[in-house]
Length: 393
Image 1 (tube, rainbow, N blue to C red):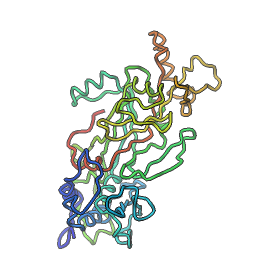
Image 2 (cartoon, one colour; image 1 turned 135 degrees about the vertical axis):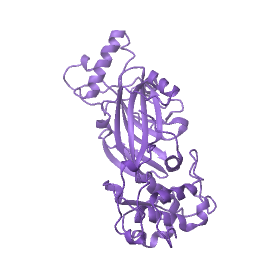
Image 3 (cartoon, rainbow, N blue to C red; image 1 turned 30 degrees about the vertical axis):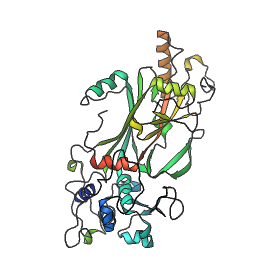
Image 4 (cartoon, one colour; image 1 turned 60 degrees about the vertical axis):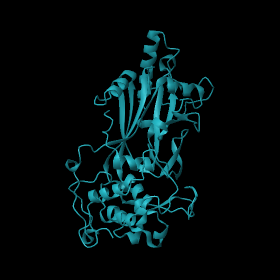
């Protein structure tokens, strides 16, 4: 047992141990079939059980977040050589319990079905804090940043939103803008924006020079333990202590897990065609008003609701008709009324396009990010090993 016969390691010390046992993680690795020889630590089946117990049960720190009390347990595969969709019970790859001071109380007789290694990584991700930044940038600003990464990436407009990592996926119904179904996403991790339409109402591409930029950053929580965090002994496990301040953080305490951009012509092409033509950046959409954009190198997937914004200066005060694409499909279900910020931006864009004689080419496009999905191994690798600084936006 870790910590037997001496002081229990702190979270920082435990994370150092985890890194030594995580050499099989790769930024480009897929989730391979697991066996007892796939990882050095698997030879000691108690390691991941013990580190899970010490990190998330005995050493739990409450940050005031509602989901801090939830712990995720990944189920073992029922038989070797099968996919993640086939499990011992219920078809779900994981089950959830609310925190208790004793691990045995949480799982009772289910310990034998738990994949402790995967469970540790999943909780490390789920209990880390994340933000999504959605920005409109010019091509020139992107070129300046790419030539000198020390130069901040300047934006025309940006929105920063706190998001939470989840092993489940929410399928939005854009006509009603309500959650209609939640399904397991694991081994992918999903970062959903429930109020995507109101959050990104003003994110409107109003120039052919605009680029739509998306960043996902990790910056706090379980993956960033304090260097001065106290040690936890068995006597203190029933009352987890809290001694975690920003001053304890390392200077490089923010990591960019996803960064990508698409240009206005790319978005407009998909908007007009109603099919997947971002080159390698867009996978086939499930519906015509959804775009699924792949990240650099095919890493990760971004789900975006794209809608045209009407030129209100050409319409009366009555209800306006949804904009239709050249292919005839309607993308007006999430277009808001004329009083919205999006309509103001569109009005200015149409006026500018009219002045330059390009009004026939310009359709302001509102882009509402609904979710980002990444395989858990990509996220775990980056939060453990990525040394490059976060994108400065």
